[in-house]
Image (cartoon, chains in turn blue, orange):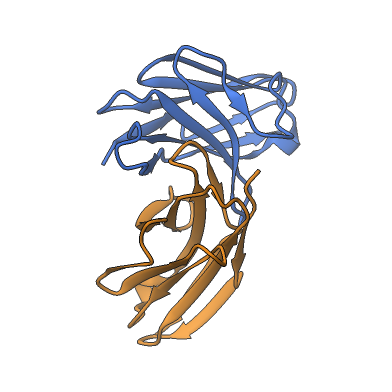
Length: 116
Length: 111
């Protein structure tokens, strides 16, 4: 399966600052990446679908100006949490699919964001 | 959009017994249904999946069944072992374009 990495694995920041999370597909070109948010002991909530070279598609209720997604290359998508607040503290996980070959989804290891 | 419901939220079984987790979905266009196992602080891992053209799929101790008419699918784990303890998520997708997850089931296998 695909190898997906995320950086950083854990970030602590002050309220009001912006944080960038990177998601990399290490062994194949991902035209589509997904970003999820997961609160403790809760399910994964799809935030947006990131398409290489075009604007991301956000799920209802997700603020696009708050969560900026850039998918500039076939191996890298970034999620920037702008003006982070404590309520943004969560586990953010990206995933890639194999481009429609099997629809299988491969997850990154996740990034824990703690906003003080 | 798609709405996926999952039951139960917690499940405890004795080692060796079977565990069943059920999910329902709302969008009849969904055609791909993966199941994930997630251990604390780790990424979800795909354990089995099924497509809408198949009614049942089995992989050793794990099986999944799908009822398209009723829009529900289930995960069956037989001969459970302590290492099966984790949180399990079902998901529904239309050809891998978006994935919508169930609320999760925390499975505890008691030795």
